[in-house]
Length: 349
Image (cartoon, rainbow, N blue to C red; front, top):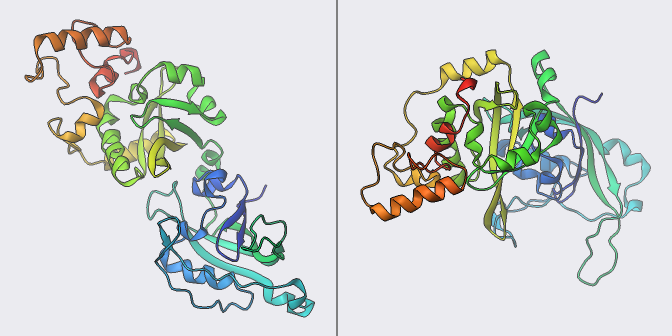
């Protein structure tokens, strides 16, 4: 089996194709990177080296960086130069071979957030591109980088054993599960229907990890990405499974629409090490506005919200009962962190 993934990048720096195995090494799904700028994935210090290797003579024209792009983001500059196949005679073929190292963003790395990859391949003409100039005439084939990307350092035995079980889940913005891929169903044991019926995704999180996960949830809502999060998930067999996860927002029309989480199962020893390193401070107080995201500003039944009238409290209790949450007696919102914890089977602990 190939210890890496195939990458095809146009002279403009767009990822024309990536094999699905990119997920095993970088954590990004194939469809998430295709037709995106490769420079969004490359370490800032390595972008110029990658741009240089996209040019047939390793000497791209200077392009100003950080100019506004039509999409409103920043432009990383283009090294695109138009060639006709007959402009590059066969004797120039040796100049098209490529072998270089670049650091790529990695959702699975828990240290620097980047993975050093060795890219080995050649520049070849890319046919059948859909882009057309303003006059509508077909474009001649243009040079693109076809490369096999492999980790600079060989993976450990543990990484080889766990990389094939990386799975992805899809959630609403409040972390309610929406979907789970085939590998996730194997690791956790649930069907998609069972995940969706359980309400908030925090019902699957170990009570000792809830505040830690909630802190990273808030960070993701602010920045678009949670960062690496190590916690325990409840499997259908009522056992806890350590996972290393990275959640990120997916936008549509400039607004966050849903959350995609890439998760890698860990062995208990790895999870225990992360637990020991975890800071013991509370990520936020329940009195802050951040807690409103989880509807848990007053999580304890002995401390009711003084701003609520008796009538409102009764209505909230009835609503909670109708939605299959905690009993009417406690009046706890089942979508809050405490509500999620109280709906868990105590036998799991």
